[in-house]
Length: 255
Image (cartoon, rainbow, N blue to C red; front, side):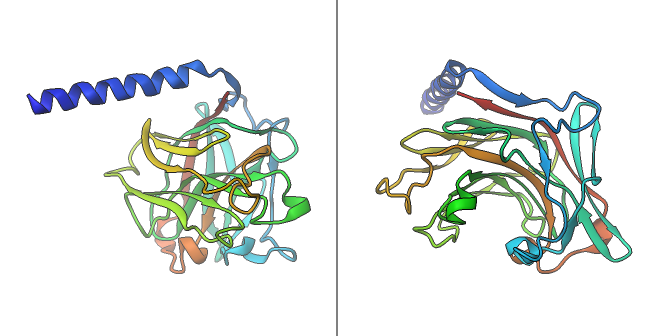
């Protein structure tokens, strides 16, 4: 009887969750159904971050290019390669093009695997050019590092945490590297809740609404990238795993 009661409670919970999602309308998406990346939505960040932010602020080892990706079977494929002892990859952003405040931000993706890979779907406040990081705020909807298989990281960076990931959750998911999975952040004026495959994994509710504690009262833009090594993904990298692919089926925003 207890198992049956728990089953119905879970069924009710997921029904309510889906109903809440269905109340929102899709306001923007990229289904990657065009032959090439849509530059009306996305821009490239290229190079190694120098001179402003060498190693992209994390001692990352890759050089970003505008050619380490392709559209294949309706998916965006970001490729990390090792060529002539140089790691290359792609990083794209919607800064200045697609920026939203509040809503559900969702990606469906298949992860790369192996020591050294660090794929991410994340967001930055559009005041970054004026106030800098981390005062602008950062929402990490999905981070994965190959050195820690079967673990998904969902995190927030704020000035109150001095940019560190104290507002974070590590979720262990068996065989998360296999197949496609959905990763989402449900962001309101009161809280940010993270989901993996519709399951809630972490909720952040601020103690106060100061800019240092809650910089999430402004539009944010999106980023997708596949980093190599670095402070989080490394320091060791297994060169035998390359090439690796971060495959994105879609990115969607609901409000």
